Image (cartoon, rainbow, N blue to C red; front, side, top):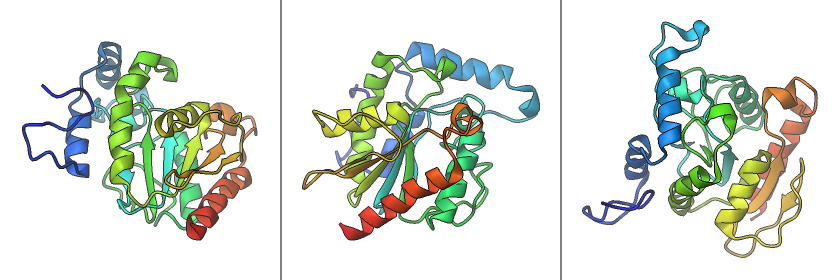
Length: 236
């Protein structure tokens, strides 16, 4: 049996997005996350009681030739865990896709389900942890078990020049993957220049309700992050 996050050696050994997606969707490595994501999919939120939840791990999506990668924390219990697409169907995703649309990375400002017509151009959206965690807090061991999936994803995203890190968790995951040490302290708008073969990291507060409802993150602040990402990607 292959290790978690590694391509199956019984095939031709050449990794691709389709294989990675299949292995992510069928992962059962973390007992706590499996139990939670499946329980939420059965119990459901009242507003979505008539919907069939995805209830499985979430893969990244977007333009395979993207120069800009958006890295978040994990699927939301009633967002991506319901719809089957990262950041789709929750308020954080509403903020994200509006910003991507304003910056020219998305063909529409909304994302409600996997078949809503959303197309990303020059952008890829993913998460450090693939299953919805209780209280939005993955354990370190769960983060580490998911890390090989992220490594394979970055290996396939060969044109990536900029990683937009949403929140401290996304920033930490990117720093771990690219082995950045020492690292600047996380903060909104912080830019960490990449080495010759390492993407530049652009930090943003996560568009969670605790940040957007309180005004800690505003839409102009969020737009500025993606304007910076586009400018850097175009100059490299």
